[in-house]
Image (cartoon, rainbow, N blue to C red; front, side, top):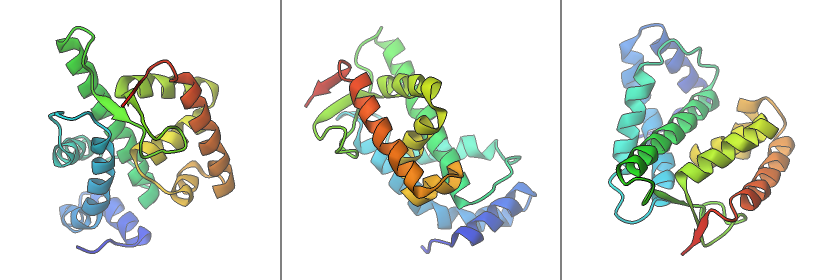
Length: 193
């Protein structure tokens, strides 16, 4: 499976938006590997015994994306940014559903191991991460989006900068600030492993 260039992916996304179903068939293998890697990163943060697998997360993501044909895809990075937001929503919705079933206990746990500067051994409930990101968005939307793009979507600094239409240095500063802010904000909401 070969990954397409950003330009190829953008063209296929725009053709799909225009109703070309063959474009979707060409696009799927080009983006699947990257989406699966992002989903695996999200799922490896979940606690042992969770029921959702990376492939199931991708399937749910595909279902949600299939309803978004009218999106004006600007670039490959724009597409993956939207995927990051959708994966965050899927995981948050699932965690809320599980929590409701158990009356407030046993929600999914999301480790922040992928972000070692925050903590190498911390675990945070996906709902706590979502709540913290919402609180950060009230203070600074761009910093919240930076975390979403990098943490949930696995976008690089450069790709995040493209989506946010700022410099890579700005994204790097936002990333550092947001990680420190989240560590402070979630300090009482994490469990030691």
